[in-house]
Image (cartoon, rainbow, N blue to C red; front, side):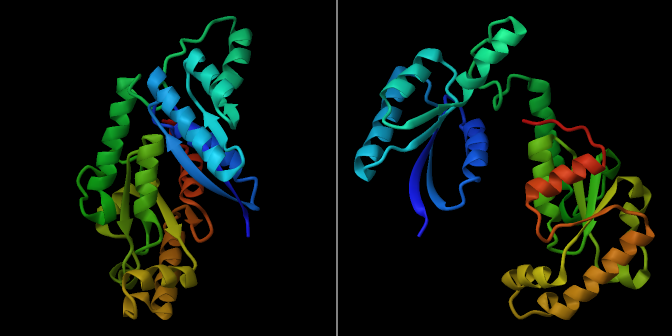
Length: 275
């Protein structure tokens, strides 16, 4: 059985920064099972005390100290956590701020919420617009304003178009639409009329038929839609159609949504905004 360790992500805002970097580091330790606890909005002395009590109670209960990833900006609060928490505390903010201040010969603002707040209202609303666009142009439901899309994902049903579109919008602020390729398109040997005028923006997703069958089987068990021969036919025809049209494609079978979205941004040369 993997060794179990408790990990706290403590932040004065959302905790996303601590979670992202902390989980990246923890992923290198495959023989451990990490019980993760996020404690956000630790932005007052009382909340700092509460967070420390929670960490110390866990240490006493489990008989070993937890690991704390902290992204608390306030120096006094950060020092209190390091000094009083019975834990291995990795202060993700203080580790990097001091060397940066030395290099830039400037003091940081020590302002909380810069990474995942609304410090830049223009970029924030750009991201909201991208999310609304992705939702409105999901699965070919709406074809108006496709000219405003930065990328249009095409592929067979259940190959990952919808989650990728939403991830592109949420993480990178990319206006992404997605459109399904169906047996009718394969019979006509051409792209759907709605996207024919946008070929330079098209990016194809494909998937191995066996994996597609598993995904469709969960949605519609025992259906013709989920049958392996159906999946093989649709994947084969979709790949042939995208090849004829010169559409760049990506196999999503063994890739995470983060890898899929980042590859699309890179290969399509889209402006990358990280929030």
